[in-house]
Amino acid sequence: MRISKVIVRNFRSIRRVEIEASSFNVFVGQNNHGKTNFIDAIQWFYTGTGDIGAWKNSAAGADEEISVMLEFSGVQEGLAQITHADNQTKLRNILGNSDAMQVKRTSSKPKDRFLYNPDKEEWKKQPCGTDGPFNNCIPRFEFVEATKSLKDVGNYKSTTPIGKMLGGVLAEILEAEEEYVKFREQFEKLFASETSSIKQKLKEISGQVCRHLTKQFPDCSEVEFMVQEPAFDELLKNFRTEVNDGVTTTAEEKGDGMQRALMLAIIKTYADQRRDDALGRSFIFFIDEAELHLHPTAQRQLKQALLELADGHDQVFINTHSSVLLADNHDQQSLFRVAKEAQGETQIDKIDSSPKKHEVIFELLGGSPADILLPANFLIVEGPSEVEFYKHVISRHYSDQVEIHVLPANGDDERQRQQVTAVEDLLATIDRRPIYREKLTILFDKPDTGKEQRFEDFKSSRHHANANDQLFVLPVHGLEDYYPQPLREQTNLTNKVKLARYMGLNITRRDFETDMPVMFRALEHCWANAYKD
Image (cartoon, rainbow, N blue to C red; front, side, top):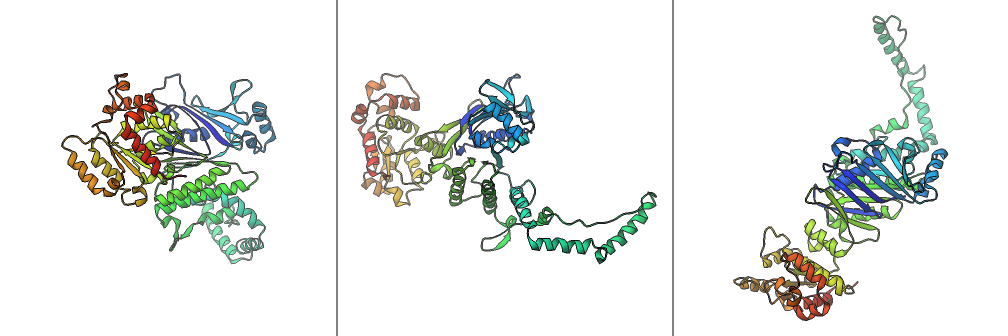
């Protein structure tokens, strides 16, 4: 059973957001743009607790409420997890044979959750009474916050994953262990037997206490100190985790990266154990800043572990700033871009194409070409206008060709860096790697007057690129001067990016290849040099 759709209304920075979820979901965006708000909204759906008054979106009207709606798939499997026959019948009377279920919680009645009846087309309070029985139907929610520590997961408590794993399983095993039975008998003999020296000493002390107590309360006739047989839970209160990574220490003494990795490993093991249990429910893991304290190699290993979870019965949602966690593609992965609009409202849009994903990596996260994980090929251009133009031309006329990553060299318009300097900055991470060096293509505008020497110096310093015909130069100083004149005269657009979009959407293949030959040859060079799958 999994979440198939989420609709959040009027929660903090979220006015209205609707997404369709897969088994592995990655949310990427800058800080303070609403990624955590989205997770908090789902957590509120599960718990129903929190300061509702402080959470309402400031643009929402007085008659508008906070609402979080989750649609679940695989419902018939979830219904089978409800052990109470009456509750199961009540839910089946609403859902029938449907394998989908819509449930929502609203700020007007935050203690209740409402179930949609598809036959009557109406919302009704979920019929199981309290949240507890109903929660046995839906997947278990597990939120690993960025601030969550190993103590929240790895210390023995009834509410922690470690406590839940050890408490029930090991206690049942111990009850059948001969050595444990002997331990209990020995404990009773030591602390409860009338002939025990410990028992005698306790009686002596309790008698003294009783004599002092009767001076204030004459009716008090006896005080007895008794040592109860320790329950298994009590035995584990001094539980600790040690890790040997060359040096054996407690887990709390390890570095932040090791602690976070261990925390996630414990949660994964917990999920594995619950899945092995015939009565166990599937899990939905929400992990905030999944890459926290992990170097790139560890991040990739983490992603693989989470993908294994998602490949089973569980579901994963992660927030990240790491290009490593979203660079490679997987069938079960969905990528969402989280951004605030000008009015401060959070929007969440699904990234459903490679070009858009690369825009996220380079523009939003500030990634490097290495983060795209070759094999691949690059076409480095001056700025966003060239990227926009190429994007539409390629998708319209050359979708059957091998994929090309078109990267802007001077993506930071605020600093207005010179093109050659911008290209050098972009090349810094790949120029030391021959496997990258041979695969990229660079398209320059014609250097402005007085900048020719700077360009010649660049060509000299990148002799291999010049010698291998990897450098292409437009015959004009800017892309807007290179468009076919008849098409250019059909619009009065002055914004360079909007003009590029218009040209890319309207230019014919013949006109592009004939009238813009330098840009076409740059593409041909990319296709000829690209790694092939």
